[in-house]
Image (tube, rainbow, N blue to C red; front, side, top):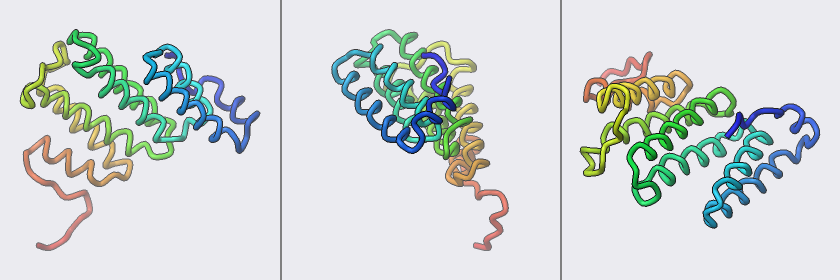
Length: 180
C-alpha cells in the first residue's frame, strides 16, 4: 500500500462535504472484498477511503485491526514470519494514522494493545512472534511507550496501561494529586 493520504487535499477539495460519504462507501467495498478474499482490491478501497477522509480515526483502526487480528491470525497465516510482517504493517499504519487522524490518542492506545498482545503471545498459549526486536521484553517496552504516547495525547487510560507494563502496578496520570 502506498501512503493513503497521497493527493488528499486535491480529492477533498474536489469532493468537499461529500468526501466522508465517499470514504464510507469505500469502507463498505473494503469489507465486501475482504469477505470475498480479494485482498488487493480491499486494500485499494481502504487506501481510497483514507485518502478521502484521513482524519477518520475509525478508518485507521479498522484497517490496522484487519491486518493485525485478521491477516496475522494463525487461521489466516500459518507462517510465523508472515504473521509478524502483518503485525508490523498494522503497527506502521497506526503510527502513520497518528499523524493524520482526528483522535491520535486512540491509535496510539491500539498500538499499545497490539504490542502488549505480541509480548504476551507465548503466555497466552499461542506461538510467539519470532524475530521481534528485543523479544518479549522489547515488545512490552514498545507497548509501554505507545501507551505513554496515548496518555500524552489525551487518553488517560494509556498512562494506567503504561504503569502496569513498566512496574506491574497501577500509576496515576500526571497531575492527579488525589488523597486516598
